[in-house]
Image (cartoon, rainbow, N blue to C red; front, side, top):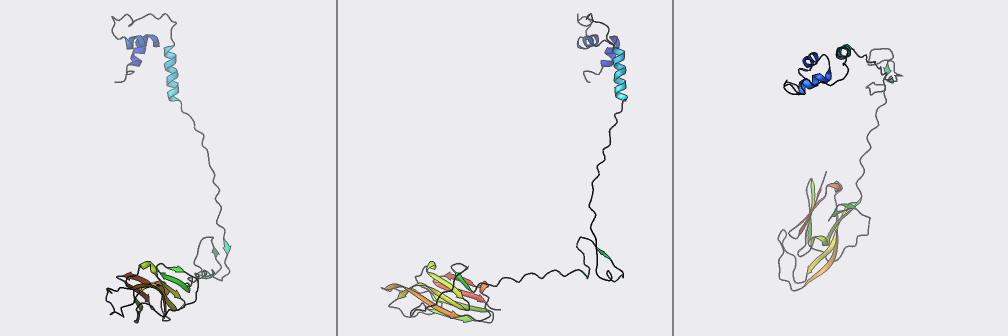
Length: 239
């Protein structure tokens, strides 16, 4: 129960005096000297206060209604120049939104894809380069190219050569392999697809450059290069 649950009852027994009602509430034992303590104050208008409270409870506040008016721009319509809309006859209108009327202008075609660069480096990374003069050397590592219906492939055998010493470029329709190889003075050619291993007493780092003519239907942007187990493999798809 709330501490003010018997407030009205105590107020009535104290003749409408709030001070006496408080004494009776906080000092409920009659033997307590403050239970019926004479406060010596003029009579408190208890009934009038109760009446005022009732009037406040019954009072209804009137809320003013505020009307908000939002102006919405109407969609602009434009007259159509065609003689009918969708075969129904008569002129019709086009809203500012998208529509599928046959009299509307066709959207512009998408721009064509950019042409692939004519001079690119495909190993060790794919990047555009400037054109340069190709000067082939007398010596170069063993190389062999293969061509199938959908693929052109090149194998370069590079024993004892680091991967960062070889470069593969494409200049228009010519593939160029150049860099630094190891010239084995006491070895001749070795069988294809066989990892080279010898006990040469003399190995000379030697620069080399070799070019190959590419078929006309090669997809340069789909060229792939791998360098594993002393063999560099170039694969270019054909259309």
